[in-house]
Amino acid sequence: MFTWILRRMFQASFVLLAMTVIVFVGVHVIGNPVDILISPEADQAERAKIIAEMGLDQPLWRQYAYFLNGALHGDLGRSFVFNEPALKLIGGRMPATLELAVTAVLMSMCFGIPLGLYAGLKPNGFLGRVIMTGSILGFSLPSFWVGLMLIMVFAVQLGWLPSTGRGETAMLFGVRWSFLTWDGLRHMAMPALNLSLFNISLVLRLTRAGVRENLTMDYVKFARAKGLSPARVIFVHILKNIMIPVTTVLGLELGSTIAFAVVTESVFAWPGMGKLIIDSINVLDRPVIVAYLMMIVLMFITINLVVDILYTMLDPRVRLETKA
Amino acid sequence: MSAISAEETPFRRFVSEFAASKLALFGLFVFVLIALAAIFANWIGPQNPYDLAQLDIMDGRLPPGSKSAAGYTYLLGTDDQGRDMFSGMLFGLRISLAVGVGSALFAACVGTTLGLLAAFFGRRTDAVIMRIVDLQLSFPAILVALMILAVLGKSVMNVVLALVIVEWAGYARNVRAIAMVERKREYIEAATCLALPWRRIMFRHLLPNCLPPLIVIATQQVARAIALEATLSFLGLGVPITEPSLGLLIANGYQYMLSGKYWISFYPGIALLITIVSINLVGDHLRDVLNPRLKR
Image (tube, rainbow over all chains, first blue to last red; front, side):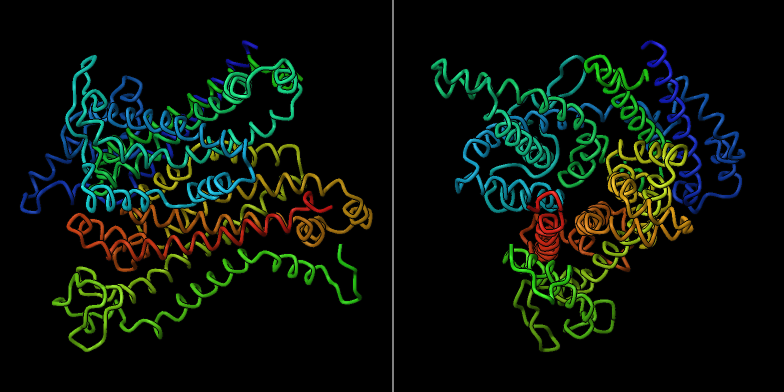
């Protein structure tokens, strides 16, 4: 077991290293940031000085060596545009993305589970069918367009909610959060709903499938035979069993939700990591692009590793397979 | 079960089963209509949106139904350059469809071949290919596409390439799973006994029997590719401004939406929506028709 975890961690770090090479070499092949960042009026000497300052005159392998050395020390270069350490810049934007993603995941439970329960209990009813058709839309509609429509209806036509930005923030643990103020919550409502639509559909379908499967099981029959009220059977007995797959999937989806926040943040001008990366790609701010990609890759590798290890510990069948 | 007539072929049975669903037929009808509109955009659109001589900047941002200086009506209004939105949409549809269908087909070729190879040879080939597939599928599609486009820069070809790289893994995993089952059947054993070359067994015997589920996956992937392309173009990472797809048209109109000029974003969005939903309607029903497990 222990050697297996070690081997798995070794694999993960190898993947991470391979990703640094791919990302670094890749990013250094696109356009020349010198042309974008240095004013055209600068003379030759000024240009050379700035290029040397940024380390862009070194051969590629040496730039990579510097980069790798820096990465190990938690330094992924300075942003060309903001002239700030790239990691600090991303770290500063991270709370906005995290609160949006976590809110979206919570919202998907609040909406997805009740709707799924209803659709599972009344699969042939009119409303049950409407819910299921709606969930297909949730899977297939491009989320940026749904976001635009939300803005059009609730911000432009009805004027109920603000269309862009984070609104008022309050400090907690030295970080600014939107969810602590009423104005911040109003700003967060639409982006969070937009981001959660896919997850709502997912949770809804999982819950519905779970309800239909569990309804036929013996423990439900027994609970009914004991004379428990239908509400108690559904909300205590069945719901408990459904929550296991739902929480597992949602935990896994948190990573994708953070990645998909790129789209939502761009639509609602939410000042998080995703908006930063899109802006950075457009001005070729390479250290920020590299740092963002590295952070996300690290995050996903960690999530996958933790999930793999947890599964092995929790499910004896997986453990047997790896031993064989 | 219907009586088997002398003329019933698998294809005819498939057609009649597919036609049983009105909704799927409607989806197919709408999609064919959209595809025809995109193909014949030059003749249907009242204006060529890329011909600057036909544009009048004074006509910029006119609401739907306005009259143009040249005398015809802008059915769906104009954008900021004075382009007729209806014509712009038809040309945008053309690019969206070409990118979506093209990348899905290309990814199908790559993914199917690798999936078949993995299932057919097993052992190390299988391990290497499937490890790459697992690795790639552990990252969300948008992130992989974002990474590739951040690295390569924007052009239509790069978007296609990014979509192919995003999608091949899904095909490979599915095709491998199907082929693993088929490989153990007698007809493959018979073909092997005849000492046919492996390429012939793989493509002439194994592949045709993996096709039905593959068609279903391909349909769903076309819809996904179109949606992903639109998303990337909306973010400004997809197609260049000279070849605007629906996603880019929507992005162009976004800034005017807050001032109530909804039509620049709204109509291309509706076109995108109808395209995706119609493909999904067809795909959903195809899955029911082609899935052998659902047959008696």
